[in-house]
Amino acid sequence: MKSPESTPLSAVEKNKSLDMGYGELSPEEQERMKIVNEQFKNPQFVEIPIPGNENEKIRVEYVILDARENKSENNLEEIDNTMVYIPGFSASYRAPEKFIKLMAVRENKRVINISLPSTGESDPMPTEIRKWKKPDRSFEFYADILNNSLDAIRESEKDDDKPTTDEISLVSASMGSVIATEMAIKYPNKVKDLVLVHPAGVNEESILQLAKRFVAEKFRDKKTLLQNPEIDSAHKKELEDAYQEMFGRSLQEAYEEAGEDGTFDLQDADTQYHDFNKAAASDVLKDGTPNIIKNPLWRAWEAFTIANGDVLKMLPKVRANTYIIYGGGDKLFPPEQIKKIVDNMPNTQNIRIDTFPSMGHDSIYQEARKYSSSIGTFLDKMRKKGD
Image (cartoon, rainbow, N blue to C red; front, side):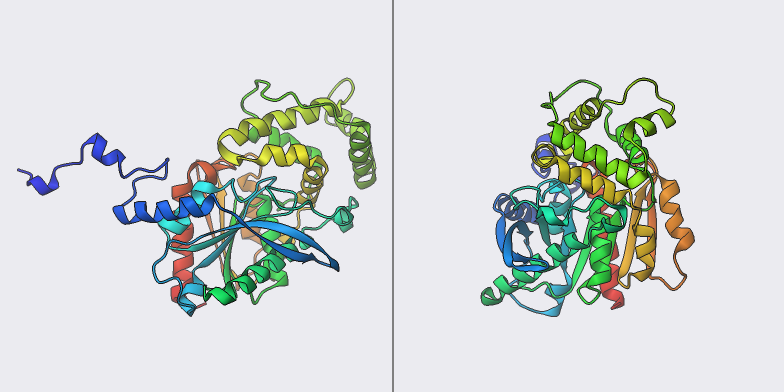
């Protein structure tokens, strides 16, 4: 016979410990969640020099989630628990809301999340860095922006006696993984751990191949959810010329080579693209669609840069503790691509790779608790090892 103390909670009592789909939270976690909810709603800004042009500055939006006790003590343990997250394609700091809150509340991390330029309320990215020729395309500039932003955040914290960001765990998803890998290579003394979730940019491939998988993975609701305005002729011409220059053939020729009949209509393709993002934004990307609508050329350039396939070439240069998670159900960057990392990494590399068999490309947003638990365990293990 059960004692009164072991009687299960009623449905009403149990629901009090649940918070917006984050799973069951203990009373202590509920209190910490209240703290990070307020922090999440109040982003901050730093103004940094543009890399390569110190006379011009750019404003960058960021949020810090920190609900730990004794966080005012500036000691090594506090510094080691700083995690920086880089969102994926078109997403600002708002997109991974559940994931970063759980990292702060349940995994006891201090989380910094930055809206890269041309996302969220950050200033637009300088247009001069947008190079369309394949050898010139790179996310290195994004890594410099991220590094300079973290330096500015650290500088702003000195007077407040808060933990600094000298050494970080860099966590990223999708396109953000390419940026994170760039930063880990360029700033090895700052990146202690590198986590790549469903990483993009492993394969070098045609942008049309990437676009086809993008639709297969993401555009599941065929209803028209957004009437995209007509693409202006200058936008269309820039995209078409960029494709011609990179691949030596027109979009129409590529369309026919893929076995399609008729005339390739860039307007139709762009409308489908925006339709998908409107659907995903409702519960995943948050403000991803506005970032696409406001900055379509940046989003197109980012897609072309992902298609460079630089991650496989860069990973052997990484010296940070590295953890890669990929989804067995990811149709955008399928397991066959990620397995190339396993086959090509040197045996000396400190790298761990996990597959989540049923997960699709954006599952980190929908299954935040699973990802936060796995990543938190990895980061804690790396700290205990002292690597």
